[in-house]
Amino acid sequence: MSLPETACEIRAAIADGSVSAVDVCRDALDRIGRIDSRLSAFLHVDEHGALARAAQLDRDRPAAAPLLGVPVALKDNICTAGVRTTAGSRVLEHYVPPYSAAVVERLERAGAVIIGKTNCDEFAMGSSTEHSAFGPTRNPWAEDRIPGGSSGGSAVAVAAGMVPLALGSETGGSIRQPAALCGVLGLKPTYGRVSRYGLIAFGSSLDQIGPFARTSRDLAALFGAIAGADQRDATSAAEPVPDYAAGLDGDLTGLRVGVPRELLTEGVEPGVRDAFDAGLRALEEGGAVLRDIRLPHASLAIPVYYLVANAEASSNLARFDGIRYGTRADAGTLRDVYYRSRARFGAEVKRRIMIGTFVLSAGYYDAYYVKAQKVRALIRQDYDGAFAEVDTVALPTTPTPAFKIGERTEDPLQMYLSDVFTAAANLAGLPAISVPCGLTSERLPVGLQLTARAFDEPTLFRAAHAVETRLPIPGPASR
Amino acid sequence: MARIATLARLELTPDETTRFAGQLTAILAYADQVQQVDTSAIAAPATVAPAASMREDVPVPSLDRDVVLSQAPAADRPGGLFKVPRVLGS
Image (cartoon, rainbow over all chains, first blue to last red):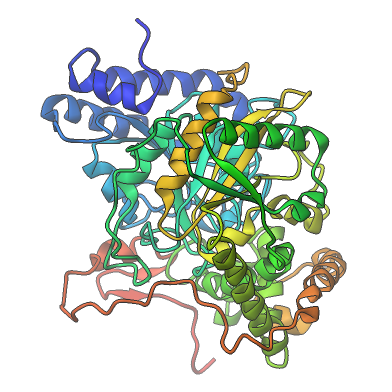
């Protein structure tokens, strides 16, 4: 018997009794067992917990559950009570959180089955998933290439068909960039739309949890389940949560799409440019109108991002001192416990802590941190200006398709430039989506990125749906 | 490098110190682009967070102490204490 593939079909089939949640769960576990030894998307598969949960759903049949029996994978920086959560770090190798993240509670209320935890760059710091302490994840389209990052494991779990849905997290592009490089959809929500409670913090003014899926309807279903206010995150927004699956009819009449053409000169490969142009044509065919716009400060997003994010990271990662959780190095004095326990961070985490500490240190705070925050305000103003004239801004999600494993690990700056088009949305707190818009001549996926006004995720889902119906891409050979 | 590593309580190997020095110099030189930007029109640094809403100060149950201590590398669980090496009188 062939089981349904999408989250919406799975939910409907379980609700009408044609398949059981246990069958769907076993199917996901089988797929992981068959494929994941090659791809390494998962750090931990919770086979026992997932099957028990599925069996319970088969008994209870909660009729209104929007994700009834749907298998979901979680990036391993999202806390799961009683289930190991490492954030891809040796420092948290044995950490079992005493509580679950708000998104995990919401997924459970929605009837989802959490299958396991996915690989990521250590503490979500990276663009390739090569900075995981537990080894790299491979791109299902070309196994000698990176899947993007930092949420690479979640992107691969969805792209390779192991699960229909996964959650990742973003600080500067860590959902959209791997979504683009793996040929799936990914959304970075408006800052404050999804509770950060239980997300292991990296850059608190930038971090958001967001969904991955293979269709815009599935993406909307997962996003609807996790969005909403939470008292435990003081930055979470009270804004009502609309039905994100409404209006996905391919009709974009009246939608104004801004294209900041001057940014397209920044190292965009020809194959990416061709797919991006096809994506723009798909929007036009749906009835959208293209307009040239300018975002004069957007090219500063990467320097601003690496000053602000690393400053916040150096502060957030101070809590990993070997005292309350995590691993502790043997040492005779408290001072040496700190230094030697923190020596277990990987190279990229140490680099970022060093930059952030420098940026916040006496004598440099105003020149770097405060200055960067002011340029950040200018970036937000650019978008506010653009949104007076257009409803969404289109760019390629990344300037290049997936690169080879090892190609950029010794050149951090080159690695950072993978996020050249994504970091601005985090700095401005705006929602942005990546939707596949084609393949390069080497058969590597390309993503179209759309950014919208704060809390206007509905426009992103409508536009992404119009693109995916006009430019369907096949799955990778391994799916 | 040594001053920043001390501020961050990070032990770096000699190899890391050498490698990072070059990489951090390059990253900061790149980030220096922000210095060229005229920000005189911006009075205060950016904030993208919605105004933090104050909730009522109502006591609610917190995490179980024993469960929390179970994650500590060294703890006196009956006493409800994290353990660290001797700090005073050494």
